[in-house]
Image 1 (cartoon, rainbow, N blue to C red):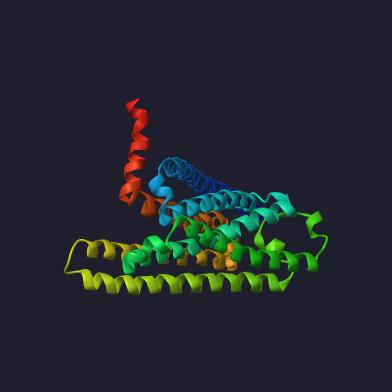
Image 2: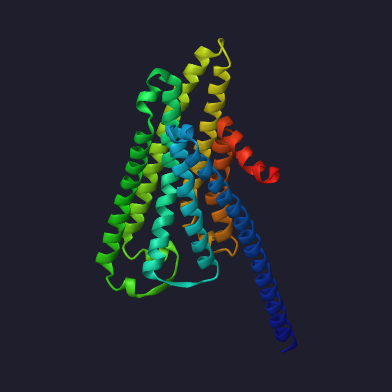
Length: 307
């Protein structure tokens, strides 16, 4: 009896210790994500203020796509952060609310790498076809390109909603812990999600590899002329790094299907490493690295200090 009581006491202490560890892990990731999210939103506000007060930015297709990407990432981070908190603390949500949050997060997740592919094509035209760049890469065409990207990604969402409602019509009257798997009432929903992710990843990979090779050829030919070759090589490295970020972002969805996803730390870890980190780095790479935008960001940040 004494040994059994001691064993129960040890198990209780271990459970309490595990709960404390889980709490520390959860709060560490939540605090880290919250701080980075605040920085991202502040950066977004600064860039938007610069964009709408600078005709040069509004007339450049690359900046238009960049702003669209930032706004899209803000929607993704806010909806994803809400879903992460719900998954960690087992919060029940009405299915319609959960479905809207999940749909916004899933669509925004796919829009970002696809927009990066559009930005890569714009850079390819600027370097490989400079005389046709102003003709082909206009702000109006950038708006049309982003609209087409969103429209194409809405189609699988409509199909998913059709599969969901046709299989279980009463699900929208329920409340669930808001996880993607709790919304899968038809096996074809999972197949559709995997197919869309595979097609999106393949399309982005092909476009980025194509632009990488073409820009490399131009950089090699121009290497003996001027500093434009060095700029082209930096662009190549940038696209290669963005390809890696896109890969990491898309792989995060597949890790959710692993048995280890039930571990206490994985919801916060997966969201921060696979989803947040690439989006936190994108503003630094595409915003601060750009000379024109960096100059205006510095002015915007130092203006209150001068006053």
